[in-house]
Length: 229
Image 1 (cartoon, rainbow, N blue to C red):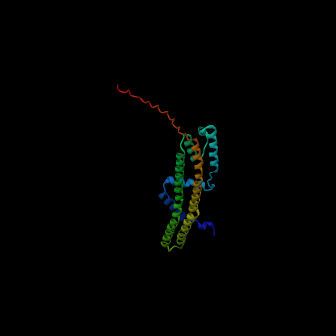
Image 2 (image 1 turned 30 degrees about the vertical axis):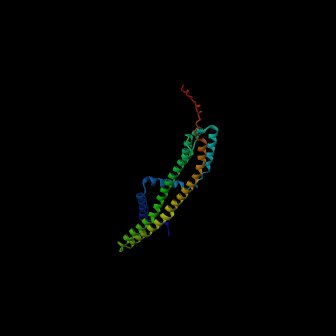
Image 3 (image 1 turned 135 degrees about the horizontal axis):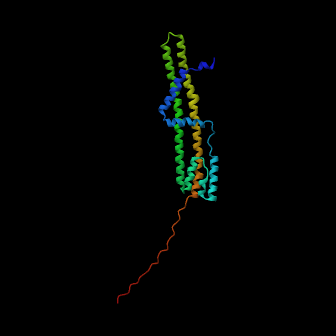
C-alpha cells in the first residue's frame, strides 16, 4: 500500500473546492482575508501583558519627572496603549480613557469572533462536501456498471471524498478555529490588566479644575432716614 492510493484529484477538487466556495459565499472577502492572515498567530505563544505593563510603568516615571507632554516622544508599538497615552497627554479624564480601552477591547473581540467563525464554518462545510463527493462517485459508479475499471475509479472518488471531508474538518479547520479561539480569549483577558495602570496614570496627570475663590461680600450699608420735622 502506497500513499498514492489515497490521492484522487477529482475527490480532492470536490471537497476542497466545495468547502472554499461555501466559505466564500457565507463570509465577506474582507473577513476571509483576516482569517487567512490569522494563521500567522498559530505558532505564537499566548499573549502576555507583562512587557506592556512594564512599559506603562516606565511611561509613568517619565511623566512624573519630565511632565506628561514628554510622552509624545515615546515609541509605543501597542495600538491600545498608544491611543490611551495620546488621550492622557491631551488631558483626558480617567473615565474617557477607560471607555476608549473598553471600546478597543470589544472591537478586537468582535474581529476575533469573526475569524474563528470563518474557520468553524469551513469545518462544518467540509464533511458536507465530502458527502457530495460520495454521491457524485456513486452516481458515476451506477452509470458505468458495465465497465469494471470505471466502477473502481468511481468508488475511489466516493470513498476518498468522505475521507478528505473528515480530515479537512477534524484535522485542519477545527483545530485552527480552536487554537485561534484560545489565543483570542487569552489576549482579551490579559488586556484587561492594562486598564488599571493607564487609568491611574490618567488620574494623576488629568488637569484639575481650579476652585473659584470666594469674593468678599460687600459690607451692608444701613442708611438712616431723617425724622420728619
